[in-house]
Image 1 (spheres, rainbow, N blue to C red):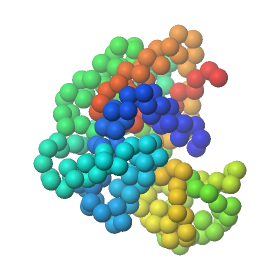
Image 2 (cartoon, rainbow, N blue to C red):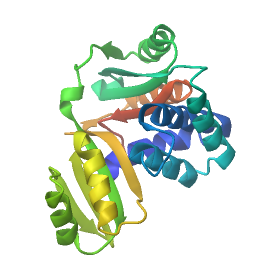
Image 3 (tube, rainbow, N blue to C red):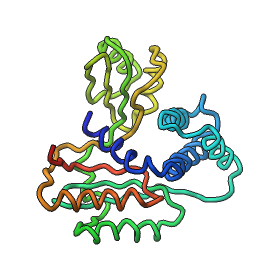
Length: 239
């Protein structure tokens, strides 16, 4: 879990110097969540989780409110999810999630990142079968048995649960995200360190030699694209 989560945090860190870009990424996700599930965070768990994550990444309140107001208006951009898969430098497997208002443009931009780094974009499903699409929750706690019981009572198909350093980590199928989060809230979890749906690689692939620099270039190019929201990979880089 730690490594899979680190992939996302590394991705965010690459763009942390360009705050406007980070704000834009969160603004799009909040807009899509609000438009799809309602504007009130109390009744829209996906929106509530996204707002909480945005605040932890120091996104200003006015950026969050503007995205919700835009969703209420119903006009402007109409973003949709686009997911691309392929093989990156060193033959590692990569999944790229985008929110785009122009799929043709986004596909062209992402494909260029692959071709410029001697990588290969694949068809849908070409690598995603080697990842688990999981809901992940990490929160303060000591009694994982109580958490497991609450989740099972809510009919959540828990993939794994572990306790380490005063933190409990829960993994469940992405389709059980809402049930799992609601069950944890009802058992008293007030704050989540991690509250996300991610693609977790089932195994890792070493990236070595000249491929390391090429992999870093690949990540930088992808992170520079406004439409890219998340990047998941199974690359194992030298320590």
